[in-house]
Length: 220
Length: 250
Ligand SMILES: Nc1ncnc2c1ncn2[C@@H]1O[C@H](COP(=O)(O)OP(=O)(O)OP(=O)(O)O)[C@@H](O)[C@H]1O
Ligand SMILES: [Mg+2]
Image (cartoon, rainbow over all chains, first blue to last red; front, side):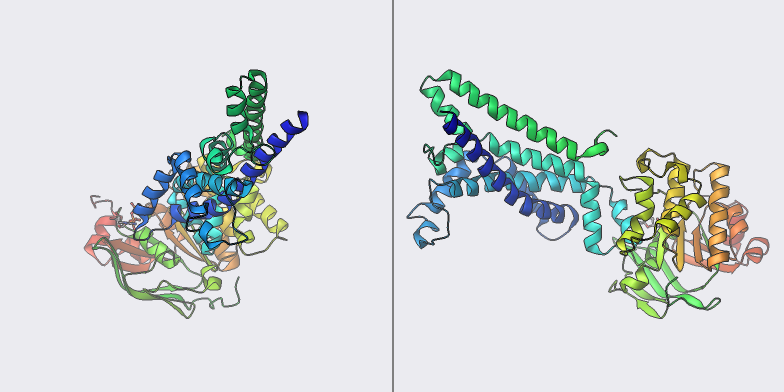
């Protein structure tokens, strides 16, 4: 019982952690580029990004499901390294897709919020374009951390997509949210509540940790 | 000082047929302007005359629409290209200090870090001492008063030991104490290090105090350039006359 409980918690953290890692890895550079660059078609990309931020996770789950299913475009290729449906890999893909626009979108907003005169001053002090981008990212760090929190919050508590592509298989793809759904349905309210408490706790601790990262810059 | 430093009294900048256009509006149009290495050149002119625009071009921050600037033998033109080394021998202190969300110390160290110079503690300490802020080196820069912030901005530029320091109304809105301090530092940089200064100012007295030569810009055009005394005492152009006598409405 306890072992099973721990397994669920651990898998939740693993899936969400890895998905967040990938979405941050791609999302922050994309957000910075979108926030700083001016190129034709930028408006369209921004609109897509904002749409992605509000995209229903369960629909993302459906797309990933169709992509990976045996008759789908990816599943039919039969690539051995490609994630299979009803595995943690499929859940990671879905969660990455869900959190990416959140991370990129909030990062973009944070970068756009930095006074353009800062970039000019930084260039005047002899920065290369790359150094200027990194400095602006650092100036926008509070917003960037918020983007990671938003990405995390968007997937750790998400249930529809992981249910679809993971299947809530005991011992394999059961995570906190899907377990809560199941235990509630079975009438095991105590267990459901305990799992809910853990989920709340994790969210709280993660947010606290990220707030600390922001350091003193937060209390301006 | 970089190795390519131009000998004193030779042209460090040669501006030729320089045009800057924003949204089809010509805001700057300078046929020729030479700036001597080691001089203090004041740029005066009414609001919107193009003074800040000229400084941005002299710092290679934007490409001109037409024409070129020869800086230490290298051409800066509509392509906007200038070698990093030469770019790094020029810096600007803007009217708004634009400090980074870091400590005072880290702000002053910033330009040196960009250049990969990490062992410059003494230089930073000396600069902080010089602007009278050594005691608040650990304070967050965004919490400083206007005068303190501008002194940090000056220290941040100073530690880079640039060949050229561009000052865009560095003392606007400051109290007499801070104005005096900043002017004294600018003067010392020029006299002790041979730093070429280009100073934009609305303050005729400041131009008088600091400059060797004065340039008068009006509606993007260079109306008159001359040695400071001559410029103020016997302006050749009637518009310059009106400006220095405060008769110009703007
Ligand atoms: N990025 C820009 N886009 C459009 N117009 C601009 C831009 N920068 C400057 N201008 C215009 O160019 C003209 C010259 O501006 P500039 O800032 O160089 O004047 P200035 O002489 O520095 O004035 P001030 O004394 O008020 O600072 C102004 O009319 C201004 O509106
Ligand atoms: Mg100006």
